[in-house]
Length: 144
Image 1 (cartoon, helix red, strand yellow):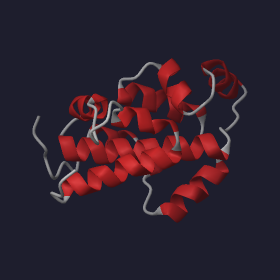
Image 2 (image 1 turned 30 degrees about the vertical axis):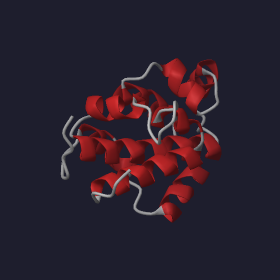
Image 3 (image 1 turned 60 degrees about the vertical axis):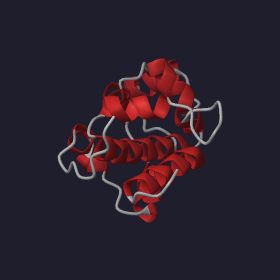
């Protein structure tokens, strides 16, 4: 596994360029408005994760997502924020590792001298923040 420091044109960035989060304020502002359920389905595809698994991560059922899509409703702010943070995380992971497959591999590896893997931390927005911070440390060459 090699770490690549710059990959400006990644698949994730291109797919979600309309959701580019410049800072925490823009993330929260976007989340408060809610996101369309299409973001959920697109993100599951990019993450190469079954929809059921992504739904568990954001604490909602796939049926609820489907109902929102059918009724053209936006997701609530909490689910929207979680999805937007996951988009930003996957952009950073793809940039750092070169592709989503390598990033997913890293997410599955136990870390912090623990039995848990970074993937286990994605079930809360704060956990996503911890993994994002870890990626920043890796990118800067800090020991992790």
